[in-house]
Image 1: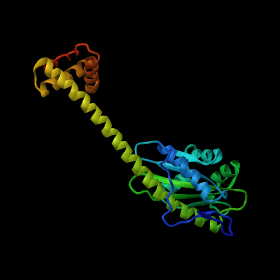
Image 2: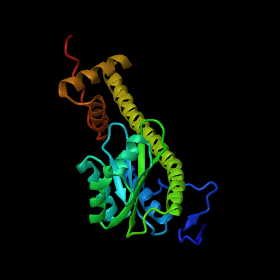
Image 3: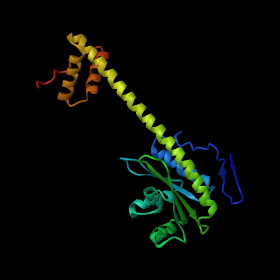
Image 4: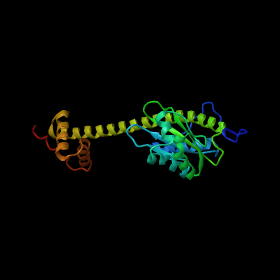
Length: 248
C-alpha cells in the first residue's frame, strides 16, 4: 500500500517490505533492471534511477529506468569517475548538485547535458565481495531536497535486503542446475559402464577405464563418449566399444 504525504513522494508502507527482484528475472541484469525501475517508482517520478552491480569475476551490470539514466550511469566507465562508481568503491553517499565541490564539475556538465540537475548515489550493503549502488537523477532545478534524500536512503535499505535475497536465490538455483548436470552426467556414465561390463565381462573400474581411454583418444568428454554408447544401445545396434586406453 502506498501513501502520498504533503511532499508529493509516494511511500510504500515500510514494515517487512521487500522488492521482488526474482520473478521473471533470469539474470543479474534482469534483477538490476527491476531494481532501477522500483527506485524510480519509489520516488514517484521525482527522479530517474539507475543501478550498478559488481560481482567477483564478472563485468559490471548496469540498468536504468530510462534510456537517459542508463546512459549516464554507463558513461562513468568511459570517463573513469562518477558518483555511482564512487559510492560502490567507498560505500559513501554522494551528492552532486549546485553546491557540489569542484571535484564533480566535469560530471555536472555531463549531468546537465543529459537533462538532469542533480544526482544522488547510495551504496547498498550486500556484504561479501559483491557491490551495488543506486543513482537517483533529478530533473530541473528542484535539487536534492531533504525529503527526497531521506526517501532514497530508506529505499536503499530495502533494496539492499531485496538484492541480497535475489542473489542468494540465484546462487541456489545455479547450484541446483550444476548438481542436475552432474547427476545426469553420472547416470550416462553408469549406464555406459554397465553396457561395457556386460559386453566384456569386466569390472566397473575396468569399464570406466575404457571410457576414459576413449575420451582421451577422441578428445571428447567422458560423458560424451558414454552418451554415444547409450545412444547406440537405444537405437538397437551393438554398442560401440570404446577403445582401450593407450599404454602408459
